[in-house]
Image 1 (cartoon, rainbow, N blue to C red):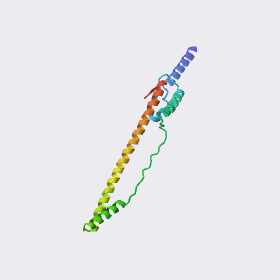
Image 2 (cartoon, rainbow, N blue to C red):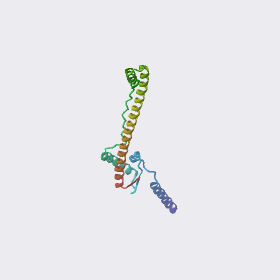
Image 3 (cartoon, one colour):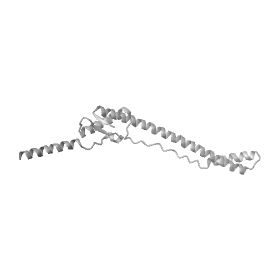
Image 4 (cartoon, helix red, strand yellow):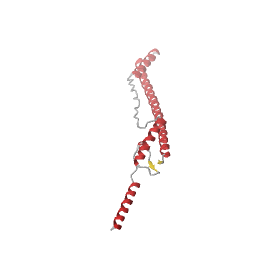
Amino acid sequence: MRRIVMAGFALLLAANAMAETSSAPVKGMASTVGLYVYPKNHQTSTQQLTDESQCYSNAKKQTGYDPNATTTAAKPEDKKSGDKPVAKGAVRGAVVSGATGGDPAAGARRGAILGSIKEKRQQKQQTEQEQKQADATKTASQQSLDNFKRSLSACLDSRGYSVK
């Protein structure tokens, strides 16, 4: 009887030890920026969460970047110019055509077409400029996030965690 009780107790201890070593990974602060953290020195889940929180705060201070801060992009101003460039082109066309002895109506039509083309070119250039600016902003934001991840990884690595 005593052997059965001892064997049961040993089996219970072995099952408990297996449960501790095969526990699911902890999802802490590092997972919010896409890092995977695993304890190398058998740290507990509570210790890992504490370390991640402290390293996260430390990385925010070092880099000046908070990945959880919500930033709102500036709304692009919608410039509704309407028919203004077309009208300007029509006036110019009529004046030039009338001054040179031609038909002012035909000159106005040509001027309106040229004014419209000019406006389209300006809109395209402005759109390209805004896109370049948005790309530069994304690049700067990505660089800040990369610096934050490096700082967080270094801190967790120094506390005995494997960070990928």
